[in-house]
Image 1 (spheres, one colour):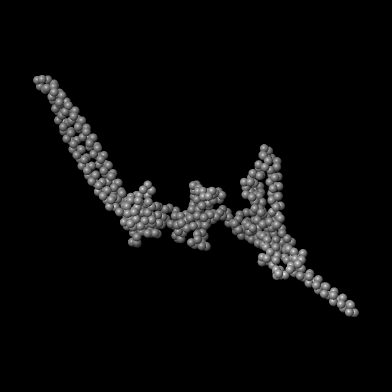
Image 2 (cartoon, rainbow, N blue to C red):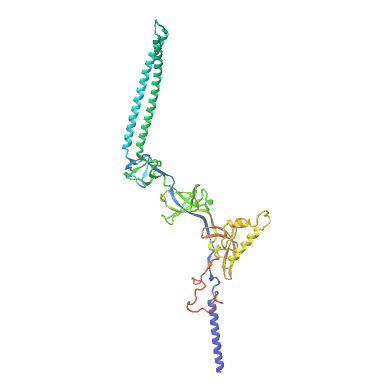
Length: 470
């Protein structure tokens, strides 16, 4: 009897231990999806854009300089009576600054005196012409009488006859010289008058006026500062004609400039107004490219409305050129297209190599050198990312995403569309909104990873594999 009781107790203990072991193993067996990080397939919009940085610039700027040298003696005043300064509103012809004009006033007085002297010389030359004309008439009459008498010893001596002839020739020549002197006096008067105009203009340049209506962006002179005019006129003021129309000058990389065209919509943000998005359009693509450290960039002008004058000149702008948009499409994270299960990368690379080799041996390419077709193109093209395949014959790019299901992972071939850098448009018959696609693996010890819920690391983990049940 005792033997039977003891046997039953032992059997009960064995059953309890076995059942506990099984329960423990079942409790340690995890969800098959616990090893992967997943994301949902969503439906929404995708906007593809090119990112670049630029500077906010006034649409039209006038640089006001000085054409004469001298010290600044004063600054002008605006309509409110305040001294011209930064952000002052100016009208066309308004005085901005004055340069010391004492030397230029003296030059004007000297030029006026020169004009008066030239005028007097002209009057004198004209009077001399009249005098020479009178002498010419007298000499001509004497010569006519001498000709009537003729050279004879009885009426007119031959020497006297010759003298009358010579006097007439001299008087005629003097009349011509007097007329030439008049023309010379007129030219001298014109030169003196031009010198006066020049001196008066230089005197006017001592008063710096605004050539346009606008707003002062920059004032670069102070009272007492000496302005030195050289081959390049010194800049005194920078005036923006109209800040309600403003531009963003964007530096676009040569790899992206082919996707930018006139009239393309663009959005941009500035750090001065975080969270606010401004809109504009591409106005002009400049051809004068610049190279910095072997990087070629082109300047693109983006026109935008600034009716509220919120945007200030020279702000740094982060610009997005909208190259395409889709609405109500299925999207997956970019990581889902990049990820491949462990061990799949090498197989896909080998498969791509076999396809490239087969393409190089394809019929209908007579005369092509071995490897000159597909290998050359592959060398120039961008290496396909994991999960992406070469475009099909219709130009559409193909890719693969992996669905996380209870039975394991399932590959789905998709057609890749637009991407905004985070989400990518995909199209596939087997893909629906709400499905879970794998974007990566969970690392041991991460929240929800294979090691979550395990015992203390100081307790030996005997008989526990990756799956928890083997």
